[in-house]
Image (tube, rainbow, N blue to C red; front, top):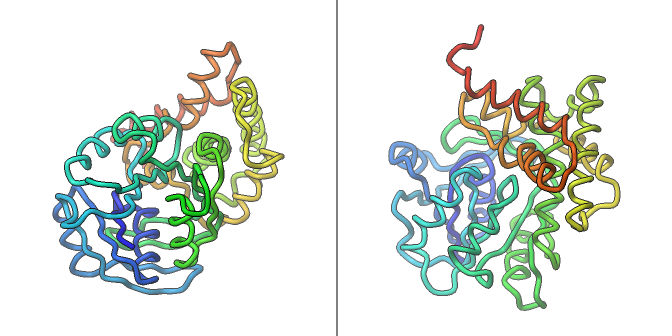
Length: 307
């Protein structure tokens, strides 16, 4: 099977290297030529809970030579539209576009560009930390869910088969939108708090202050989800967040990685999304508003930080 993985960040590299290791044809797409050249030279290196290994993966800046079966979009949410439009010139035929991103709105943008029949929504609880160009630490394992599943011969089932063969714990579900909102609630409880306090996932619920704010942020998110009549893919949101924290205890959350690297974060697409949706529905979201404002303030003052 042929895969194009867009974005050589922690998650993009993890999926690319595991799929290549399983025997699939994998190409990485990067917008930075110098980084692409480095990855082509050294390969993608993984360390962590699944061992240490390296795979040579063709990394390009202008699209693959052949049309892939699946395109895994692993860019930041604020780059979804730009990436989706730029890929369109290379992605012909029946290639299926898959979003494995944080936040809400990515699926809708890709459906607008490619049509609903060519897009799958996905979420993953895998934890990975970017150590450098093409170098990652696999810090935690978790389930990867994809949808919509429309029968045993559907693209979602074919992708699940490939991912499971590559060592992922993956399954297809009927409703991708519910999946994505389920992942959003988890990110609401972890990412911003980890980014603000500067701790790994496992510590967020262990500290009394962050635990209390986590519970409030999740409660607000669930109120929004309930009002939107979204069915979460788990019965107890707080328990699920705690499970993810435990399963990825040694992982550095993606938003904390962004803050440490003084890069833009996805705060507007995670806690900020709860604030916007809450305002539209008349639901108060003070905890999420505070978290959003604090992370925005950190972003705006990267060059003013007192070391």
